[in-house]
Structures are given as C-alpha cells and as structure tokens.
Image 1: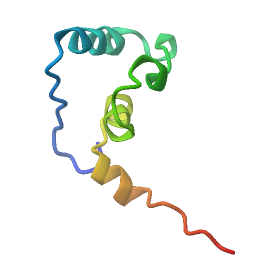
Image 2 (image 1 turned 180 degrees about the vertical axis):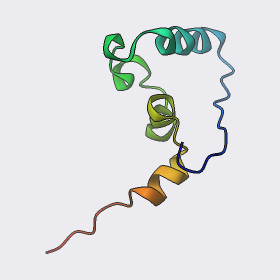
Image 3 (image 1 turned 90 degrees about the horizontal axis):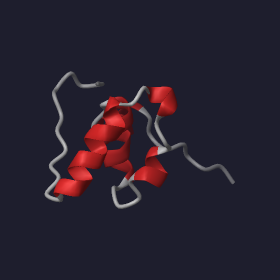
Image 4 (image 1 turned 90 degrees about the vertical axis):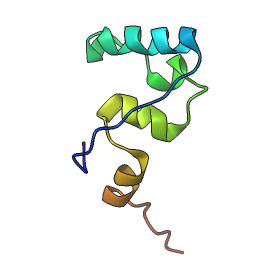
Length: 69
C-alpha cells in the first residue's frame, strides 16, 4: 500500500488460510477484530491484512514517537 509493491502472506496451515480468506471476504465493518480473530499472527501481518501495508513500510511511514521525560 505504501511502497506500491505487492505483498503476500504465506500460510502453511490450511485451516488458518481458509479463515483468513473468509475474514477478508466479509465487509470491513462486519469483520471481527483482527487481533481476536488471528492472535497467532504478529502485529505486522495483522496490519498487512487490514491495510495492505508491509510491516517495514508502515514502520517507515509511522515511526514510533519518541518519549519525552
């Protein structure tokens, strides 16, 4: 989404792959929260499902805020 390059998520578990496809086919406002639906995926992969953004691209576009003390 941010870099313009296609991304993919490789899933070896057939049940998980089917669940991801079913989740993506639902209208966005009717999907369960991705964190609840796929807790086994890391935040980067969940973001890619949500927005299509690769984890590295997302981190580059939205770097963590620096803490001030």
